Image (cartoon, rainbow, N blue to C red; front, side, top):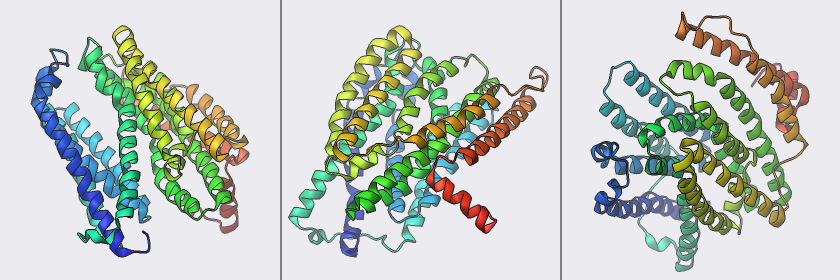
Length: 434
């Protein structure tokens, strides 16, 4: 409907109106079954759930509108701004809240509520930015769509809605169920959540490149340009992998520094992060498999596979978490992600003759090995016992600088990406970075 302004405005109105209505119905059941939900938590955790039970719907609505408006801005090629708001500004705000709570400037109650209300910032900014685009507008002229078009929209949207729910459950089921099946309750979740927080940093390059790559990929497929679609898919996969490897090395080599600041029994974060890293890295290394399936006639495949894997994920975490605690939850997540990505990889390879791996994938990994060695074996020149924070920040800065320099030099030498080679050639020709 790109060339029909009336349909675009009606579609935007439906997108902003229908999901909150569906969510509102789900929230009604959430409150109706309040007692049943609360009794499944550990006894020590129930008071916390009672206190903040009503704040979950607030978070859901804010997060929902943030995602919808972010996707709209992505469709209007306002990608850099929306990514900065959601991936950088929001995280900076969360870090500020953590620091304020850590140093006693705010209470735990304000900290929890603040981490929810902070989503108001991107929602408001996204809405303001959206109103400045040419296509933004609302319409209640329901007759702008024919019955056949409504049927197509419902059919397509329904599967994608269920797929989104399935993927969300797969992404958060370990965090949601760990307090139920581990006897330490929210105590175990504290350690596990820190590891998940670090994994989120690993995903930053993927999220930054996802929307622009998806937009170009969808256009090429809509134009029935098969060679271009395959080329974009392959190039996007390696372009996502290169910064992901760099981010992974920075995280691994600085975990000790991060835990030095946190203290208080968080050493288990390192093995949990390592387990979660396996699944997350495989998911990121397989590139744009989800996006390819979304825009093709095979979009139902993701949904059906994800449903089966949710059942597997639940059985794994139900079996492993009570016995192995946070390690069992981490392995449950990783095993599920590996199976899911392997299924998508083989399916796309068979049906579309596309796969994200090439010789460039190996070159990107080889480029990261010297950087990993340089960061891991970088000596410590300062005494952490005397100047903990000074030592930690200086060590992290120096270690990260060495990693980045070595990695960039290796990338310059091996040139694993076509876009990287073109960028380097452009620098040599124009004598400037941009």
